[in-house]
Amino acid sequence: MSKQPARTPLPLALADCHTPLVAEPLSADQAERLAPSFKALGDPVRLRLLSLIASFEGGEACVCDLTDTFDVSAPTISHHLKVLREIGLVSSERRGTWVYYRAEQPALDLLSTVLSVPQQAGA
Amino acid sequence: MSKQPARTPLPLALADCHTPLVAEPLSADQAERLAPSFKALGDPVRLRLLSLIASFEGGEACVCDLTDTFDVSAPTISHHLKVLREIGLVSSERRGTWVYYRAEQPALDLLSTVLSVPQQAGA
DNA sequence: CGCCTATTTTGACGAGGATCGAACCAGTCT
DNA sequence: AGACTGGTTCGATCCTCGTCAAAATAGGCG
Image (cartoon, rainbow over the protein chains, first blue to last red):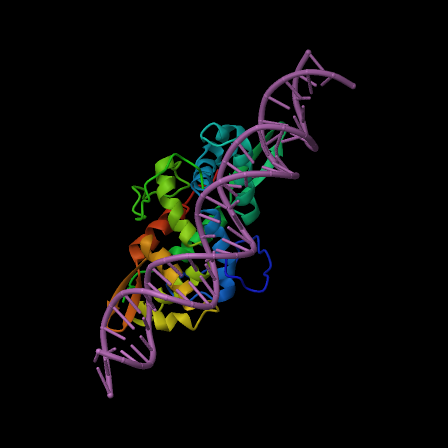
């Protein structure tokens, strides 16, 4: 992606960007920080995982609750959860035998805001 | 991505999904339709292109207005614009010598809604 | 018509990513 | 301790994607 010199990972989606993308041009830096979050959402399995976790009762789900829903192997689920976690879209916590994942709503909300279209934003 | 049997391309982001992802679990089908749009947003150059186009005066921009802003070659810009266009995030129109791109705000708004977090959605 | 500019298409290449099976680590229970 | 279940890491494989240079297409103009 955009072969630039070699950038910092920027795991957190907390770009200094809280204005809609349609309102003013994203800087190269902002784009570089936001893109990985959207990329993380760019896989159907991850999208479903996130949605499933977020809409689970209590707002969190055990990995064992998630695995059976998908046609992919457990390592693959684990891999996708790791991607979501490292980008800050979910957090995880081990409680005894099980590991629980929880959606990070502020991160989601930030992305939603970036994509939002303010009234009379048209031509 | 998710090696499933072989799915239709589903170029349009018009999934039958207008509810936030955190409200109820996405179906496999919905996820399969939405993910490509997020994937399209998952590249910094495309994110900036979209933002630049959307926030241009008149809501549209000529390719020649875009090219100089980036460090990548013209074919690469063209490639990214094609990706955005085929997914329905922008539309293009040729007027004489130049080609103008315009952001498809309804598509953006749909994605924004999907990511939005309704009040008291928490635990 | 032939040339010039704007944009896209083509082909190739290297890097990244999704997936799996196997091996491994973490707790629990007996 | 040993065995069992839940979950993650490792290594390999295959396919996708971003990028560029070169060639092709589209309009406008002399």
